[in-house]
Amino acid sequence: MILKAIVIELCAQNKGRLPLSHGRLLHAAFLNTLRVLDPEASARLHNAQCKQFSLGLLQLRKAAQAMAYNVEAGEQALWRIAVMGEDAERITVLIQEGLRFRVGSIVFLATKIYNTKQQHPWADNITTEALEHSCAVMPEVKYLTLNFITPAAFRYFEEDYPFPNPELVFGSAAERWNNINGEEYFDVELIKQVASKFIIPDNWHGQTRRVNLTPKHGVTAFEGSFCYKLTMLPQEYRALFIVLARFAAFAGVGRLTGQGLGQVRIQYK
Image (tube, rainbow, N blue to C red; front, side):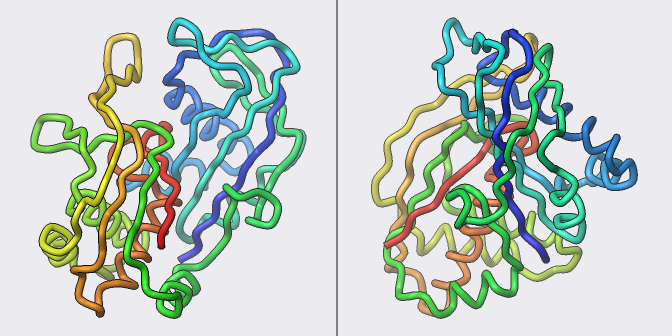
């Protein structure tokens, strides 16, 4: 399975206003642009039961005011897009300099594309086979930190669950891996049981936050930095959980990752 994340430099072509939580607008901008470039791939992504892409929020230079960004013409932004599965290479190669993305009332022009870590630290390109090999040969990891750079939430029955319990984080990553890969690669229930029993939250700082997806609908989410202690994990599971964490850096964590939620960066020592 191919995992690919690209970073796009964007330049606003007109003045406008974006809500603080603008992931829904980015979701529409991504699929609408892709529909023009490759209607079949756009339809597959849109209709897939398990989303095979995740979107970061725009990284703008000016801070939001009154829960919105006031964007001026010529203002620059960064946007990270991750795609996983058989269409990953096909889709990301279509995103070239000169493309235009309409995000709400603002048109952004793609002025530069970063495809590798050497070009930009947020970009990446790897197969799951290579990812597993690199995790298997790395030095022993005792602490794993997930930095939630956008709010994240899980669904628990009919309620939002705004905290990254280990079984939810790693169980959802294993489940999404299986769904995108199209085969039962991980035993999801076993992953949840092992995470619940052997992965200990070591320290964290964060908060809950209400995220308004639309003017009338929102979710209760969390954000912050969460460190997990792995020293109790049986040795045979160590590399496996690092693999799932690194996969989460592409796929996102929790709900609505295609609308900007649950974007993470990982650190380990």
